[in-house]
Figure 1 (cartoon, rainbow, N blue to C red):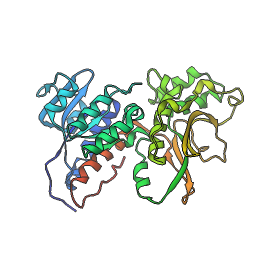
Figure 2: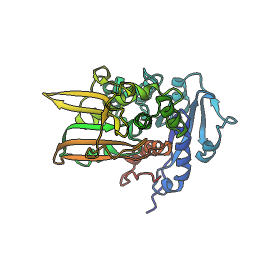
Figure 3: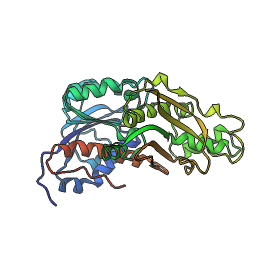
Figure 4: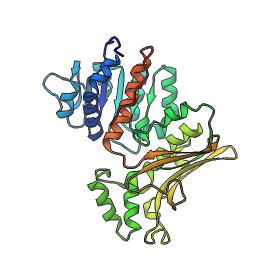
Length: 345
């Protein structure tokens, strides 16, 4: 069904690395479909480490952006905050590089919400460290703060839970870090940690410095977000008991063992107990099917008793699809009768 085209939503993208490029490519590929639904998107701001924060009043074609950064007709802002004022987007997409303190994403998200800008982010740290503060800021200013891609990439876990308003869960177990899965497979097959890291880097899933993946920090941040989503509680990051790949025991290292860095949280005596540690997952374990970079989450509750969802081999394109779905969801909320279609990948 064709719908009347509304003015395209003005979108600013902070961070145009691998995920950002994949996002722009998806926007270009899905352009006609979005237009038919009346959900036009116009990229009016781009910020990268190399080019700085740049903007163009009339925006750029997404297809051209996916190929190369435009610098002929754009203007440069003096800072990220000034950039928000210069390009005045309706939606900010935060894909800035990850950091332990959540900056500069944490400040940028807050400044966008204060300006009445919807936010879609793939950054875990700002929400793991200041999620309660930022979600309250979004509520006060009546703006969306969506973050599907922070955990499990394109899996619509939030939408799934919203579709089950009577479900009650009291625990969750998850494997949410791809690099650690590849490295643990290497260690339990007699290879070294360095060989496992090298394999993950060849697959394109490990950072140049994968320490956050190996010591459990990445999984702990994701667990904070999962716990809020599934159990309704914000767990302080510092209260997540954490062990990493290096804490693998001699028994777990035995050849052929299936071990994963498992993040889990349980409601016990009115409080949440959360941890990340290497755990053996045997053939009877719901998480035991995972291989290599696969990720999954198991929800444990009552009616339904157990739910399992995940991705066998998440990619950068999957992460970008999760981001795009959130952007489309924000735009669709402003048009009566339009639901947010999930981008096909």
